[in-house]
Image 1 (cartoon, rainbow, N blue to C red):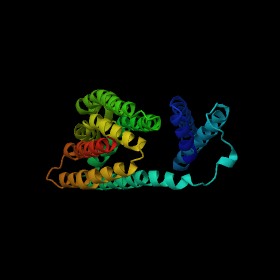
Image 2 (tube, helix red, strand yellow; image 1 turned 30 degrees about the vertical axis):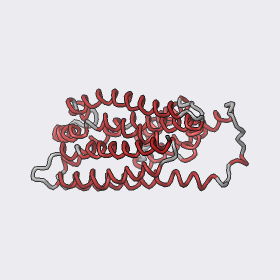
Image 3 (cartoon, rainbow, N blue to C red; image 1 turned 120 degrees about the horizontal axis):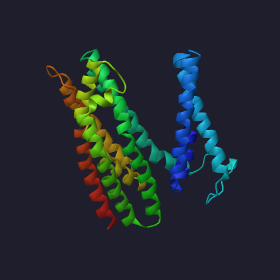
Image 4 (tube, helix red, strand yellow; image 1 turned 180 degrees about the horizontal axis):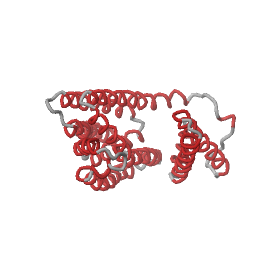
Amino acid sequence: MIAYNVISSIFRGLGNSRLPLIFVAIACVVNIVGDLVLVAGFRMNVAGAAIATIGAQAVSVVMSLVIIRRQELPFRMTVKDIQFNGEIRRFVSLGAPLALQELLTNITFLALCAFINRLGLDASSGYGVGQKIQSFVMLIPSSIMQSMASFVAQNVGAGKEDRARQAMKCGMAIGAGIGVFICYMTFFHGDLLAGIFTTDEAVILRAAEYLKGFAPEAVVTSILFSFYGYFNGHSRSMLVMVQGLIQSFLIRLPMSWFMSIQPNASLTWIGLAAPTATVCGILICLVFYMRMQRQMT
């Protein structure tokens, strides 16, 4: 997985996001086929699913290595280049805050899952289905953030800060525009989306209940993640980490816990903790952004 991410980052840094998409698509197909063969065919259960996932990643890495060797890169890349050097410290200083943020953010989601599990089986199952839909909703903001970081870094390196700022604004507009449609679907038709994953009416109702509160996240996250991409493109990953920890531990987690202990706790109000925290995160990022602009002038 690490090798694949490194190679994909090289392509994105060169402005080619099409090949990483192809690699992921191939890995998904191999994973699905592997699941059908090993789980459904050979009855290997969880072990079969794990082998299929690892095999899909291996195929993706091998294909990406073959393709990158045939590309005309603006630099030479040999086996001797794969070694530790003085840049490792810089990579770690930029990546460690983001890794720590991801770790602690996932811990908060585990805590949220624990809060909801206390509300009963239907609520827990409904939240699980809602999380599956949520993972698809987050694909667009995540993609915007990754492409934004590469594009902003390229323009900052070229001394074109105006283009970097314009890219951030375009990312916000495009992501939020798509998010409006997704928000409509998750708020008004969450039951139809949940019905893709289960036929249990009680679970579908609880999933739709959660999605009503989560729905605005489809819009506001695109704005927040565009800020993330802009900051990461400027090597300001520490700002991203600080903001992420504030919104996770001081807003989303306390609000989720408070809503979960109310009489007849509603998954809608618990789900609303995510967009509420994101809006607060946007305000924090706006303060960081304004400070950065003053420092640049």
